[in-house]
Amino acid sequence: METDVKIVEVGPRDGLQNESRPLSATVKARLIADLADAGLREIEAASFVSARGVPQMADSGSVMELAPRLPHVRYRALVPNARGMEAAIEARVDEVAVFASASEEFSRRNINCNIDESFERFAPVIAMAKTVNLPVRGYLSCAFGCPYEGKVSDHAVVAAARRLLEIGCYEVAVSDTIGIAGPGDVRRLLASLAGEIDKGDTALHLHDTRGQALANVLAGLDAGIRTFDSSVGGLGGCPFALGATGNLATEELVYLLESLGLATGIDLPRLAAAGLRIAAELGKRGDSRVARALMVSGSLPSINAEGLEASASPDNTVRQTATHTTGAVS
Ligand code: HMG
Ligand code: MG
Image (cartoon, protein in one colour):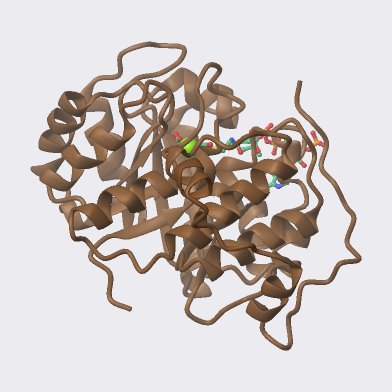
């Protein structure tokens, strides 16, 4: 189905990387299957980073092995360096993403190097991606503010965004890591970026710490942005950005877009059910208000193991034997 807006579902990665309750690879793979079943076509499913840095993502290889692969769904992964790229290739992902920061201190805390060094590490990743024809996305964290340095200049954001495109990223995900932006900030920064970067090469990755994410989407749409990241159930957070809460909930994003007459191709009740199921696995209520409203009105389908198996391809079914779990962060 043709859609007016591209939604990049980051729940299995950004959503789960900060959760303290360990989940098995099977549960994570089932989430990915549920999301595909609900109509998501772009799913950030894994992250090949240091297990010491982000223990929750340590089983990404197993998750990718267990997740059913549908031909019309693109399974993406985060990679910080050449080693991560090797793992991503082995896991047969469809796309990778490198992640840079517009703030020096966040870069050091997140990936243990300064901004210049991070670009040196990305060079072999891009070279390897080219040899196997994998598109590379570039995240730009702290585009609206940094948990350590506070305000980040538009100049720094524009410079880093241009650099990501120059090294070979096809798109820059301008990221509000700590959910500090309001629509005025989004409008201003996108105007600064517009002179330098094609809006078709820009995506918005919004965390909802201050409840501004939906308003920020509207500001993004007004500025011509058509790619938005979100996380089912509003899960999410970065272990290196203290105080930052979840991503914009995919359910809320879909509700907003559909109400504007923009096609998303997503089955909202199925998506909401998927979000409530993973929230239950995490011992949480789930942060999507749209999902709760659908539940209260009795509009949710029940997503069960049979539904999952039906969505798996015959040669790559979800095996229930994997029990590997990740550790927990304090
Ligand atoms: P380093 O310490 O500079 O590098 O880490 P190193 O080469 O010295 O490696 C350190 C350890 O990591 C070693 O293990 C390596 O073997 C291992 P140890 O000897 O200590 O046991 N290692 C790896 N293991 C698995 N896969 C790899 C890999 N590379 C090294 N690829 C490094 C540099 C980047 C690896 C590390 O700092 C790291 O992994 N950090 C985690 C960063 C992260 O995942 N952050 C969260 C995601 S970013 C995010 O959420 C923001 C985003 O959502 C946008 C937004 O909202 O802003 C994208
Ligand atoms: Mg994020």
